[in-house]
Every structure is written in C-alpha cells, then in structure tokens.
Length: 96
Image (cartoon, rainbow, N blue to C red; front, side, top):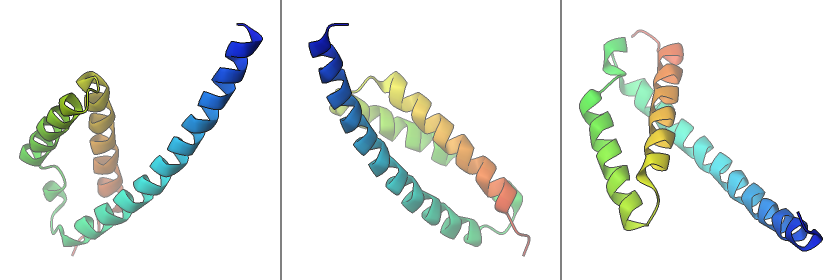
C-alpha cells in the first residue's frame, strides 16, 4: 500500500471508530428499552414473537433498499441483534 493510501486508510478508520462510538451509545439506549419491555412480559414464552421479528426484518429490508444499502448486510445485523436480545431477555427474565 502506498504511503498516500495508508494515510487515507488511517483517516477512514478514525471515522469508522467515531461511528462505532455512536453505535455503542445507540445499543445502550436500545438495551434500556428492551429492559423496559422485558418488565412487561409475564411469561418466558412471551419473549419470542415470530410475527414481530418478521415485521422488523421486512421493514429493515425496505429501509435498506430505500437507502441503497445491501439488504443482506442489514438482515444479518438485525437477525444477530434480535437473537442477542432474545438471549438477553431469557437470561434476565424474572417470573412474576
């Protein structure tokens, strides 16, 4: 890699790090909202809502296409996020 490209790469990586910092802040907000939702669930079986998951994934695909983002990327990200939060909810569920 040329020195010029190394400098460009370095600048892009700094920007990526800033985006990552913002994503972490958003994940914290999302986690707090999931905690609120979890408090409302009365049974562990309420944690997985397949209809809601399909609705979310369809909406994300539509928004991805509208924003010219490869929907395979966002689909994978959202599926991983959804299942990560399902795992979180299962681990933190308290019987009422």
